[in-house]
Length: 273
Length: 265
View (spheres, each protein chain N blue to C red):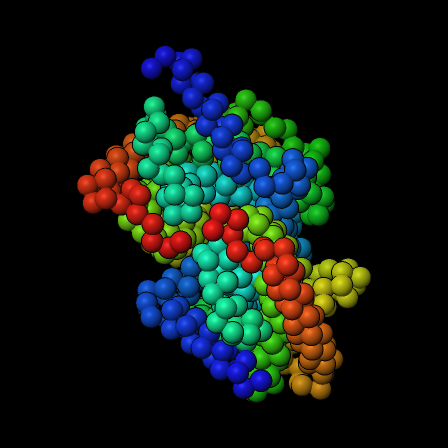
């Protein structure tokens, strides 16, 4: 497949994803819709800091953690929920198989849209959040190149987690939400999002060390502050290794689940609607 | 009235039976919120916040399930019934829609109470949270009043959401976190400016959680917070009245415009 064809396919998937997500309202309402929820989720967490009247550095810790965590949720939902929604709700999953693309590629495109879309609420909520905790934005010296690189690496492991959930989604209907919520809840608890994961008791802190999200969130904190040193580059290497390892394993699992689902006639089964 | 109560019982029975027949659902419904609550409590620990903040978050977090139940199992329920083709069947059966709504509310409230208790008890045990056990009786009264006003509000949503199409789920999403934030589920609402505190008093969840915190954590008594009880009774009456009127209006409009059935049926 030529690079031009791949790019065209990705653009087509981004476009169809946008149409599916946004065609229920006007563009203005849609933009409000995608901003409101992540912003309030961030405020919900930031007010823990406001209530406890702690030092501003901790406010920054929660601000970056939760703002980027929202992006994670958006991306994972884009990949994993799509499989469930297409099969159970819109009943179009079987038609995806007759497209000139493979299922993982399709899910990747759908997830990519949600991940890109998440940038807008990320920026808006970050600015609102920093105003709420009165964090001086002038203290930030963002290394944009590294931030973009980290953003791209983020998509790799988010895609991996999406694939992982999607491979379970083939075999479940009512438990679909439970699987997604379990992963999201676990990432909030183990991901270094609103508190340092070192506070977790053993062996839960070890779980945290094995998750790419922990390194990813910490890198975002350092890169936005402008604290760039050799350790940051080392952490980027670790993140890249972890992310691609996750992606490889989850891709294998997704393909295996896909084969089993086809064999058992689960592709076009509708059980909950 | 007797007919309506029979319908309510039938609908509540289905909801309770359907939700609880598989115990794994109960485990998931308790375990999943526990992940989020634990993260919040660890955050408070990291901030070296006083114990009352942890207790406060534990009480508030156990009430979150009710709000999601209102949105996803009350507000959007008639819309889903319409999508599945059940709504015309409900109406042809002669069962009053108010009875069905009441049954949905009672069944949902019962199910969520089991789950909220599970979350609260586990949080108390895991994080060694101390609550004022002598205030259990007034807290129970407050809890029931909170539920009655909350589910009356849910009945308003259920009626008005009949008007919407695919945007229902988006509206639900928009009403999720903002209301949880304004209700101060993880922090006391006195962190808000006074004007916002007054404004959020029309949200039953905010009133209920704040009242429970006053009783269970700040050791206040029934008379100290009697205004919360009165406000919740008032909200229940107002919301229930609006819900019944709105439901009738929507049903009549639906009959005239043909919006009770799906377009392609």
